[in-house]
Image (cartoon, rainbow, N blue to C red; front, side, top):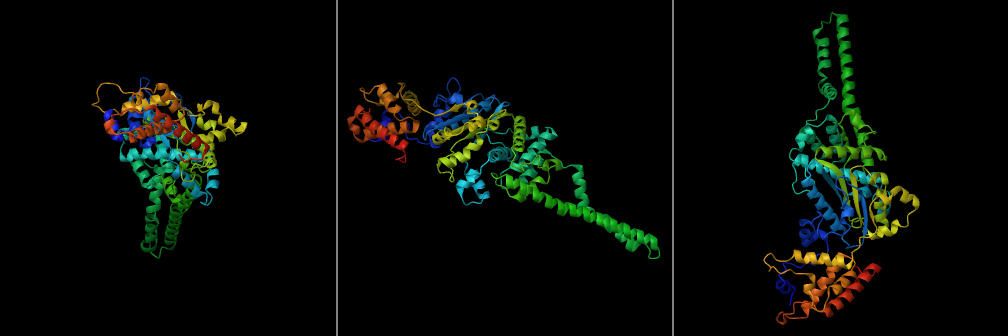
Length: 518
């Protein structure tokens, strides 16, 4: 017998237990995200889901540690889907999501800026401001993308079609905030022309003084040229004093224009290039050249080019000011809060699961001032190895991080009963639409001498969803490989369950001891 025949007998459309990665699991997408329970949470969510999610009216921080396969990525996807549904129901009180779960580009850029020789040393140089810059870049790039290219309806945070109109009617200060964010943090390759397009759509006009100076720099040569033509060709040579005065006036006008043009074309360009270099030196997690940053700064008012406004030092105050600007822009777009989803810390190429490198990346974010901002929350879904490292830290570290305020979950654990309910829900989600009305439970797949307690105890030894799915998948595979379709044995006997349970429990223990790859 093969698995297809087994599933056809039970009117099951697809194998409920073949998925091992939430991002690629179609059953999880249907079950954990498409359906919702009475409380509004996903059916397949962990029992701590509500604690991790918190109130979306007042986004907060949560720190979760979990083993590989314990459902951290699934939890992150469920949070994102829950926020998407919340945003649809509350168009003026939404929560903007910053997906901080693919750090390859961020870490590669920091590594390159640090010299690109020792990856461990580059990661140890990561600062809190580097993370803030990366988050601002992700959010700003998404906003500008949608304002210029149009809204993306399938995004968890779409910008409404009338967003440009709302921004055009906004205060001049709010427009300046968005233009300033775009100049610094737009991570697109064409950031400078995108900035021009954004200012055009928002109808941000340059100041009269800037226009006048530019006009004089480009066309100011006309006046000294006219004065020179008059002095040398129109004033008779006999009028000595008058001719001399006219020549002196032409010379003064020419010098004044040269000074103005030199300031506009040389000195100003040198000043902006210097600011661009200073800005790029600090924005280590944003892939922009110093020339691109300098050109983006040019249209900004002179006061917005100041180091007191621009992130040109390693101080965090300018970054918090930038975060406040982002919140004000998002509030006008209908988003009253910001949620950052931190996940897959162990996966970037430069980290490759090394605990010390993960620690270097994550530890700068453990700052109470950063984690407890108003209308701003981080959901940090971290590997269990960092929990062990955390317990070795000093009391001074805990005082700065204040993890007692951060909704800390020390281990994302699953009991056998929780795993049974999860697997049973997946089984029901895979029933064919035309199946008979008789309900199907997970226990129905096992022989009559197998009790619900037996299945729960076997799943309890797996500890987490990924291994629970492997256990059930192997039970079904082992049973199908040992019987024929003509025998009509459609239930897994106790002997198969006990045999597979023993082997899978041993595999899980070897995995925890680090002597098995998976």
